Length: 293
Ligand SMILES: [Zn+2]
Image (tube, rainbow, N blue to C red; front, side):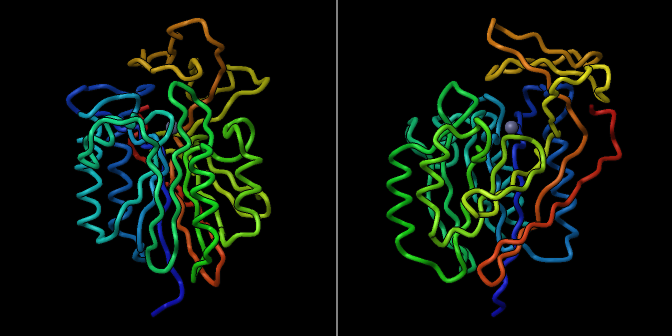
């Protein structure tokens, strides 16, 4: 058996049940994710598993998760590989638990550890209800410390929605101290809708593009330089259907706003685990159909 394990990391699909006929910033997020399914059908390698690191839906309900579930079950069947799911700030735990786990509707965080092909994947739930930023709860930190006492054969990958960078993860120092010196060989996150690689407590950490659309925060930049128009989004807001001409969303209350630039760039990461190292190969997925923006 090969010592190498290859898998795929994708994130932030923000799916919406087709029956709602809604789009995000003029983007049909379902169609965008379907492009990925096509790309996965012709990969020159076989992924052992997929990690989808959160924002599976966009502030929706059971209907959205039914759609996500159908999509994922189809993929699992087609690619003969499991999807490991992480929840993000736009997910809804109660609806997720009800649809995916057939459980009663509870706000209990969804975290677990699963070993696939000798790689231990630890999935954390960093969502704080009604907030954009996240944290690793004390319960999860304690659970993590316990699990990481035992090393694994090929190393541990942590999947979490909020990356431990900037203000995205409130208690990143406590989290970093907890995993330093353990067999964690990499951290995979989403949330930023862009592609970024950094070291966190000497551990490689990446965020990956959203499958729906890329996003860059505009800092001291003229809005007119924005290729796709500026989007005004309230931090933590529930985004309404957009007005497609301007891509402008009016904040629904008076909380702080920021400007973000939307990009067409989407993609995923091919990830290899080899000799207790995580190697990440960013892949761009292009779309012919730019009119969906
Ligand atoms: Zn997102």
